[in-house]
Length: 273
Image 1 (cartoon, one colour):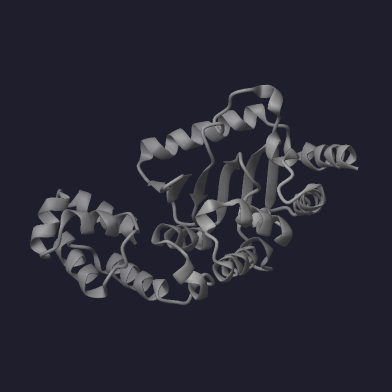
Image 2: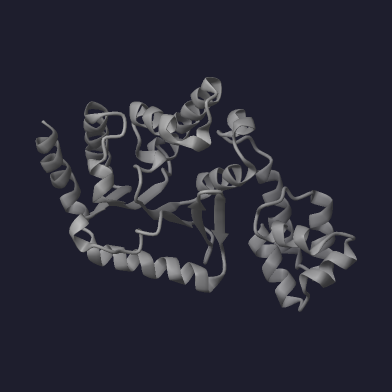
């Protein structure tokens, strides 16, 4: 919805300042509506559609999106334990058709076993010391994995993982062993693609940290997500998305082929014993 509203504003030749003045709001609010970071009020949307002169069919599409946005999400029972930026990401992820990216510290939450997730939470200072909150975050992680496990239209996953992640015994070697077996089984699914970036390549586009590129069924709809120590960045500009695409292409050239993942995990399991 934010993307459509931004495109309508730009076609109308209006700036954030122009629009803010006409609906008695601020440029920050308009910007956050367009980036999907603010809950959108139906009345404000109707005002914006009037200002932009939106055609009737597009107007109906946007108003339908408002109704869709109000339906319950799987993460809502846990939302009091989540910062707003993370709720935004989970909402986007739940609507995506394909998730691409790289993990360099731990396995992606969608790929974790319960024991591995519990150990990762215990080591994450952001999770805090509240056991109830940790239990809720763990339950959220389990619910989140339904995105790749559902029978109809499962979320496609194309992830690169640094070899160091496969060797890092978070929770101990027995937990790591079960985690590796879990990923080995997951890659048998046609919609899940996990590729290992070997240590021998040295520097690569994921060394600076993980990032995710979400693709949606809507034409030309992508959102980049870059987490960092104190929050995250959402990327939507073409040049930013193109840069993430180039990083993924570089990783594809450096990583083992997807067909080698199960075998490489088997080799590591042999090392663990």
